[in-house]
Length: 215
Picture (cartoon, rainbow, N blue to C red):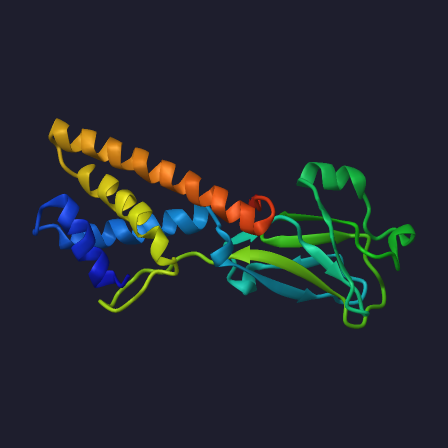
């Protein structure tokens, strides 16, 4: 469904014709919520970081990434890849207190952490050729600005998105009846998400957990 079609779809349930701007804002907020809090498979992709000789730390800020999913992989020069173990900064520092020690050199990476917009791996090598780190990422929804813009969701999501929009629009009204409708709509929105998550996890062979930059 396009942005304009969503407007008509929501207005049918809202039964008001004077809240177009509020509906559009609520639609953007709902799509943002879905893609940041619930990174479904349809929004997942992968980016790669080429390893550099004698380098353990890599700046992620230039990649314009907001959400990185767990299960980063190391891919060696032959093309083989395997999942690395992620640690918090505290645990990583305990495991690897001195990354410049020669004991760590020329070993393939086993662990990583993401902290302060940086990826740190350990061990690391002094000589690499085409080795890379593969980072699973999720795409955040951008604002819809034109009538023909289409959210990056399959049509089966239309009702879930509608309830998210209605919950936000009803919440703008002061009367008790609207507040109750807002609560009911958000309840349907949440249940719809849980149902879609179950379907998505079956396709994806288990849930992907989220790691935000700087955490």
